[in-house]
Image (cartoon, rainbow over all chains, first blue to last red; front, side, top):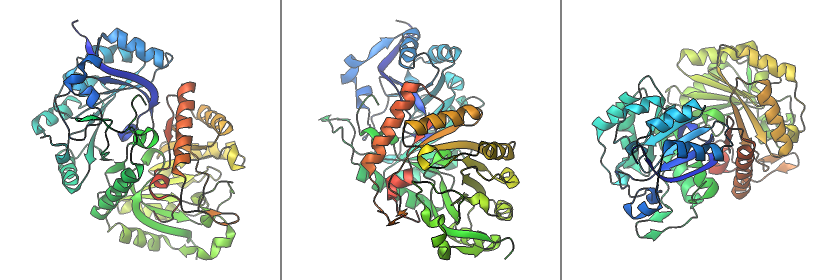
Length: 243
Length: 243
């Protein structure tokens, strides 16, 4: 079907667990398929081709019908996530939803710029640090930032597991001084691992230990314009899907 | 000393644990003295007269010298908290700090409006719900909102322990439709209780259970413009002081 969108899951309302919209009620629309293979990916079921049979091709009208059913037709923030949602033709969905009063945030690693980023309310660029095992295409990331100019609120989010990731976050911040930067505590216990299902339990002590380390690092470094956050949904629901 | 400010503690840099600035690096300046006696107050050491001997009268220049020492003279967000900081003559401190590039957020229950609220960067109004045992002076709260008009970012934060508190938060939100509302999960285990020192350990399972209940309540009620947050510092450091 022309214009169809590959969907891994649609769920909510719950609250956004990350970044500038942390705590905000939202319905998640997760697309299937990704151009990255991050070591610590926490949504491999929306990334790896072997989960392809769990994905559904849906028209924008079908997706919005599902979102409206979940939200009782009350406009709510729609969080477009993945996988990499920038691989999907999302412009018609965003246009349709906005007509109905819904707002849209999209999160992507910034490897595939799209002109329709300008139609979003929020663009969260989440370039992947060294611990992911991925390389950053800085030109593509620059184009993503440019695509959002004058349009959505734009912010950068970097997952930080260690000192190398932290140095990478600093590099990203100095490349885009106008963008607010969110440092996100890494969660080393994803739901599905490359070798099979992982644990639904998150190690909260470990997550909060990593959070305290990151706060100490930022404070010692006097990086006072960064924001440091753990993943709220991991604290609340562990690595469980659909919340 | 004329112009002196009653200080309970100055500490940081750490991160703000609550509200719209959650995760943001900040130095806390906590004033001593309060016109309220909330049942679940988590900073009674900055409220009750029997802790008065722990408080210090400080000049604005002394306070800023301490803030600059803690921040290595790098401008940072200063969080003015209490007690009720609106009881203190803070205008000269704010003017002095802003000259040096520091930004200021103040949190108050909104019982004492001050014209100098207009000089803040952020005003967090935190009127107290029924579970606090306090009554709201709605006229005073209206005046606080008016005092901030055209000046700082203004937001409302309401602690929610139960259904009555939730209904109260709804009432506050409908009175001030232009202000963003933050619903904060209650923490029933304060550091110092009326009957003596409490536990430094927070019951994280209890806090997150309350968070999940509040998310479910907001979702079922389709209150999609509210933001739901736990106290991040409680998750990270329990009820410990100075972080």
